[in-house]
Image 1 (cartoon, rainbow, N blue to C red):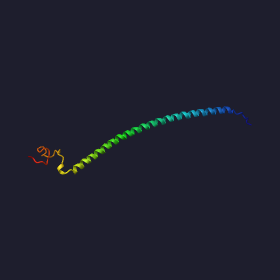
Image 2: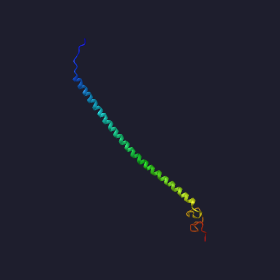
Image 3: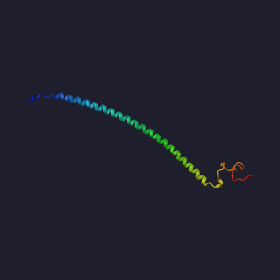
Image 4: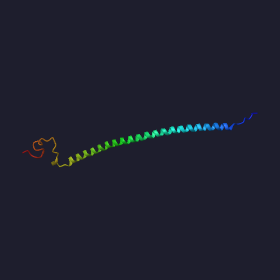
Length: 110
């Protein structure tokens, strides 16, 4: 028959406690590392968010300026169309009479 040896439970409990402590320390270290990585990623996200906001603002400003310029051009065309013929721009360089009659193409020469 097998001889029963006495069990040294105190030694096993000590080893178990040491193993638990080492695993807990290892988990705490990994947790700290992961927390540091998360903090670094959050910082990158914040930086990219700010850069993105600035870029959108600049691009938005440029687009707004282009839209405003387009509206101004449309308004100028509308004004040229709605002006009566007698109010044609006197700065038109295509008329031959403009220099001899004081810049008014509809005023006769004297």
